[in-house]
Image 1 (cartoon, one colour):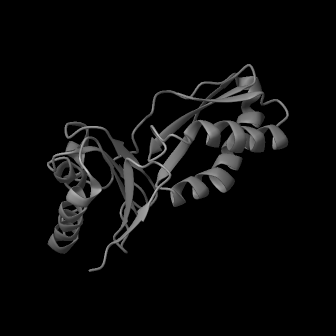
Image 2 (image 1 turned 135 degrees about the horizontal axis):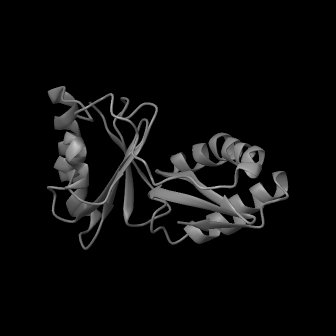
Length: 186
């Protein structure tokens, strides 16, 4: 088994591509071992000293570090991911588990059509690009022209995330949805 690694715009996060599906049809973002209890893979990654976050994408895993250097962490992470896949263990203990709720979405029912357009733009234009960088961005709410988004994986805490939100996503949404005045991270 060959696992590729890719740098992300967030220097604290590295993207691992095992060449096999990780979490088809969904994502999970864990910030500690307790949160990761539903995933043997993510839970085991937290056993490596210096790992502070694990994000599972459709075909990739991003790992966020704190305090340790990649040259020390990377071999242990690669070995753990390889052992996991060779063992045949599931990525999630309950494969039928519903995606994590990020909290209730909020928007006025009268804005339903606008929200549908925003979600469609996020799903078709933003999320695929962000996944290339090892993260994910999902809709959280819309109120008085402001779009609220959840940033996950390498996007969470990334130094360039503000620029991505303001210059990329905000400009895109404002172009296609004139009712959008601003984009904010939750």
